[in-house]
Amino acid sequence: MNPHVEKILTEISENKSDGAGALALRGLDALEAAAQSLPARPSAALAKVSKLAAKIADLRPSMGAIGSQAVMLVARFANTIPLERTASIALLKAISKEREMLGHANATISSIALKEIGKGGVYVSCSWSMAAMRAMVALKADKIYIGAGYPMQDGLRASGWLSARGCNVEAIPDGALSTVVKDADAVVVGADQILADGTVINRSSTFLLALAANYYKVPFWVLCQRIKLGGFCDVEIEESSESLGNVPKNVTVKSPVFDKTPASLITGVITETGKITALEAGEIGSVIRSLRDKFFD
Image (cartoon, rainbow, N blue to C red; front, side, top):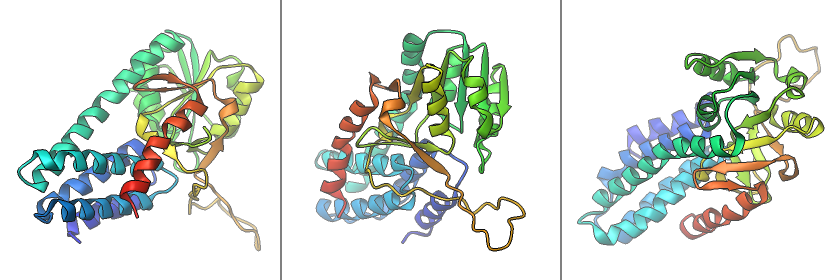
């Protein structure tokens, strides 16, 4: 395998701080790096790209957007090959189009969120989600509470990003998020993927946040790109290798990075194509799942 491609795959596998959207873009980087060494025969080129895309999809099962983006690129590539002089040109053009669409997605999500949620108010969030963060900036939130994001501290990183853009942000331990939900106008979170039954996979603490929102009758919104749809219900949940500190002898440690929030707790999902329910998001994802069946062995 191309050493540059291999390096990118390793980075995706080991990166525990960036969100699924950012790592999906790195997956495109790997496919782009492979573009110059494609076979001349279109069918052989498609087979090689599909094999690499499947490998990318298997790197981080909990972050389904990485695999969804990879398979959507393969589908676009398959349609582009007959129109171009070489397979390499076709792949590069397909990647360029996917990047363009991803580049516009979060801005569109912010515009839709502004219409659906309204301007101003108090919001609660958790973890690192570019879609959710950009939307809260657009919403001109009066106050944002954000969970620290144990064990990766990505919530703290998100709070810094929001503060640098003029937001009034207060970081709070994940376990204490419920104490601020009751006075919030809405909970706004991202997603690493949405499964076929509408379950949302996101950083640990999302489910507890959704339970608190449901209890206090506060709207719970999930904002994400369409590449986050299409997850399988038997998804693997990653665990962190981070230590909990001085663990007593003979006590084992379990530290899941993600959790599952059922569709029944979700007010709505906002993607770049509009507002839908979590169950509808799962149904739309069936198109992506069918592409996986078609292109991945």
